[in-house]
Image (cartoon, rainbow, N blue to C red; front, side, top):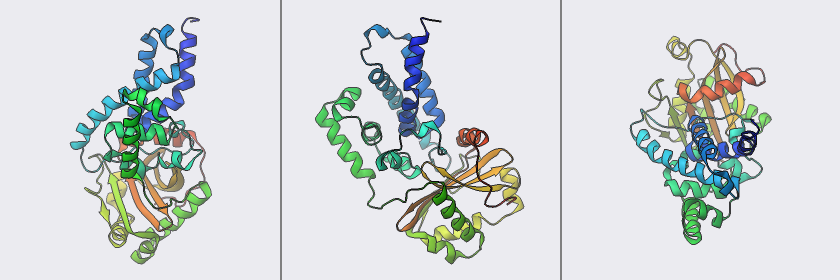
Length: 314
């Protein structure tokens, strides 16, 4: 045990940062956990006497594992039923990683994780390590085995492809509850105009059911079209209750740094709707209903305290 303990301690000290990096790179908590576990197995098997800086060694190994996963993930997502959206993570989950700066918080939003799907694998690595974790270009270049000047060019190109000129509203629990309360009231009112007033003109709505739960086959855009869809979505019907497993309680929460409506049936999180809010209003409504992508959310929900539901027995 004494020979094993130091190596485990070193790794466990790095685990939270490795999980946060992997989640941002892969957009999936379960895939991130697998990548980190694979990294541990390689760390366990390595000749650690020749490892000068464990953190750097582990980051490089993890990055290479994630690069391989990204390549296979792109193939899987081409055959994915409907739209693919990232796995939602509740506030307080260590997989979200550092959140001290605007860039760090932005890098983990559902909107940004979705945008990063546009990037090449190297672009995503450079952007995440630079924006969210403050790695220097020479450090990232060493991880990817590229030149520092090439790393800078990749970073500049990646940032241009995902940067928005809109200012996102920062959300704590109080802000999130207010936004979600207003959103839910408008959605349940049956009045499309109430929803339109909350949405930006070019608002987008996207949903992921994983082929298990019925969802939008493709994103819809425009405030009026999104409002009409949301109005129908929140009309309570026996068919909807059967789909989600019964009557639901609706809660407000902070998920991936933004306000979210959480739909809970019994002790299961069955839907998470995140609201990307800017000074122009709600610019994106992302609905995650794929049961496989809500397992971690359900575990976190069951283990944490939360306020009373905004609506019980919907």
